[in-house]
Amino acid sequence: MEPELQTYFNDYDDLFLTSGWKQLVNEFAQNATVINSVEATTDSDDLHFRKGQLNIIASIIHFQALIRQAQEDAEAPNAEDI
Image 1 (cartoon, rainbow, N blue to C red):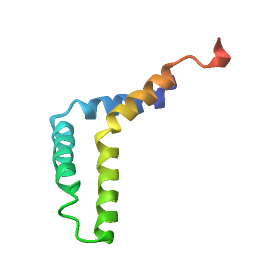
Image 2 (image 1 turned 30 degrees about the vertical axis):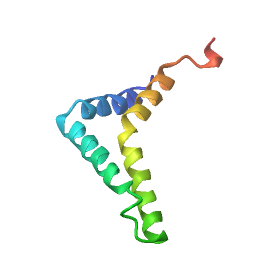
Image 3 (image 1 turned 90 degrees about the horizontal axis):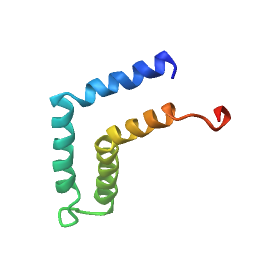
């Protein structure tokens, strides 16, 4: 793996180990429960707004898994190398 790419993944590994990252993900997970309430939705515009919020929250909550998968893909041998 290229050194720049290794640094990229190492920086994210460091981030994911912090209590701040864990706190952020936990806060977003709790907020998602409140935002996902159909009862609190006032109209279709609000529904679309909430849908966008949930999409962004899901992206943040699953970001660590996405980075882990990208790292595994980057470390996997290419078909050309076999």
